[in-house]
Image (cartoon, rainbow, N blue to C red; front, side):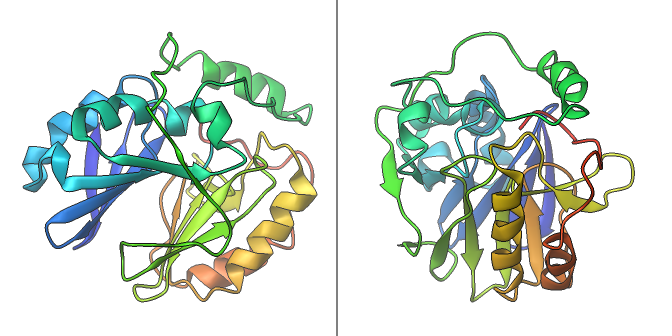
Length: 245
């Protein structure tokens, strides 16, 4: 796992597949997404290098239920005691109560997804002991008040997190950065692409300066303008995606 400082209070945690973010408020931290199966222990073991202990991470906020974002949540919660939170529509899938719905693939996405899945670790995620259900408009106690934005399209319960006091937006897989050149692009492997584009348009109106994506390099300046252009959509067949979603 690579640890990259994006801002004095924000670190990117980059795994071989997918990534997560750590936000710091004084002596406590918040983890946004938790990587694939096995990533929970990797994160916990890396925290001392940042001057943190696992118990300092008070909450894990999951942007959606997919394995490369939620797979490490149960393991990390067991090691740290952190509360796990996700939108109430995706929470049952994270807790293992039933399987989540598969994406509605465009033809070009199928071979890309099949190749990406080959790189996921085998096994079944350890479900968190509990998942606190979130809804649009909830405000969480980090980053000066993190707003929960419901952004359906990638999954029904996808969320973004916006820190108005900091100008920082976490988009989950609603937006990604292309692997070849880092160009921002609408997320793929979705349940409903038109709904996803509408969600991006909503995010563009928040006025974020920094946008942190579920896959690929973040945008560190002028994020709202970038998102506004993406909300207009790209032709079907654009992109490849940087990893499983």
